Each structure stands twice: as structure tokens, then as C-alpha cells.
Length: 129
Image 1 (spheres, one colour):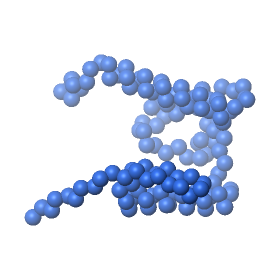
Image 2 (tube, rainbow, N blue to C red):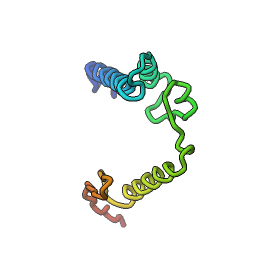
Image 3 (spheres, one colour):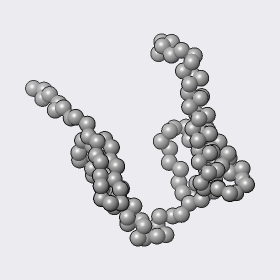
Image 4 (cartoon, rainbow, N blue to C red):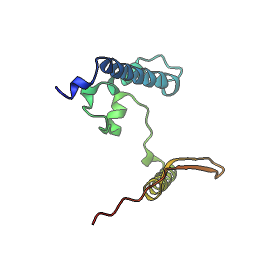
């Protein structure tokens, strides 16, 4: 109770607004892109499922490909296109290495080989003796 007392009732409203906003964005994007030119209730159904806390219990829970397909999402398996999979994995590994081995916070690159890297300052930690 002492911890909850520091939060006003407006916080609950703000949280619900963000959940509603996210659900609306997902429904809109699905309607505009994945289900473009299709008269379907799937965008709303999928957005409602993904925004329902009871389905996940945590923000970081994985949604596997079989469940995503069963939900109605149109998915192409990366494993079905070996050349594309190798390119995606190369980009993924390069990104992981860049973020874990440098002070990079943001990387933007294009097909021409141009790259912008935003870095943050790193301060050495004091040595305790």
C-alpha cells in the first residue's frame, strides 16, 4: 500500500489509454498492410488478442509461429527461403555485435552503404579496493 499511495488515479487512466492506443495502431496497420483490400474482422480479432494481458501475463512472452499462424497472421517462414534467411541472420548478428561491443545506441544504414551511428558516452566505473 505505501508504494501504491505515490501513484494518483490518473496513472491507471494513462495506462489504459496506452493499451487502447496500441490496440488501435495494430488493428490499423493490419488493415492497411497485411489485410489490405480484404473485408475481414481479423485485424480487430488479432489486435484484441495481442493486447489482452490474460493471453500473455507479461510483456516479453514469445508468440511462436504456429500460434501466430493459427491466430490468422500471414507469415512466411524464414527457413523456407535459405538465401533470405542468411541475409537476415547476417544483419541480426552484425547488429548484435555492434550493440554489445560498442557504445552504439542507434544504427541507421541504407542500401548504398551509408551508415549513421549514434553513440553514448561511457564513463569508467570506479575501482573499489
